[in-house]
Length: 216
Image 1 (cartoon, rainbow, N blue to C red):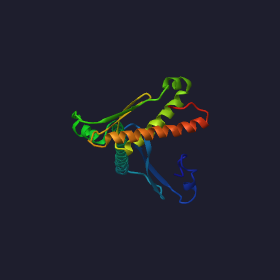
Image 2: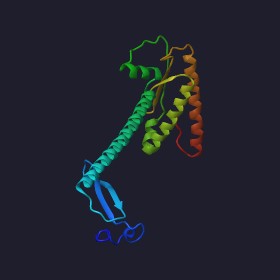
Image 3: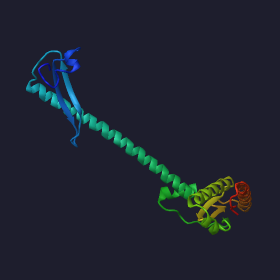
Image 4: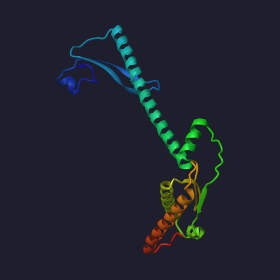
């Protein structure tokens, strides 16, 4: 190393530990990227034999194989995690759209068998003058308000064992007595409707204080 212009001025050569020999073999992956080097140092000057260089080359290839294997295991773990996250998102979306029992049947069988219900109660709500509200409101604010109200409706009907069927614009539809039959569904729907009415009255009292248009 003391005779090699690339190394002679390096601190580890001029000072402690006074290296005098270096041999290195690059670690290059299948894509041609040089990731590092397998290095051999000694404190005495020496000349590597063909067999020693070949052994170092084999060691470099073996090291590269282990690094690539490790990288692929990490990538596989990341792919599995991403797949699991997407699966959870899909299942959550399915449960947002369908009752849990129906969602499970759809996942298990790939289809849902139609059923007839002798008695159910339907509640349908929409907001008075929504077109006027839409014309006078900033779209982002309008959608956020609607999301806030419908989320509250979701919590109310869940407490009364009702099922949301769908929302269409400013319309909200839910049902009692399905997918599991109950005898109390007319009363459950009425109680939920009263709570929704009272919730919106409270919202409008707050909006009135802020000089905002009420949602009737």
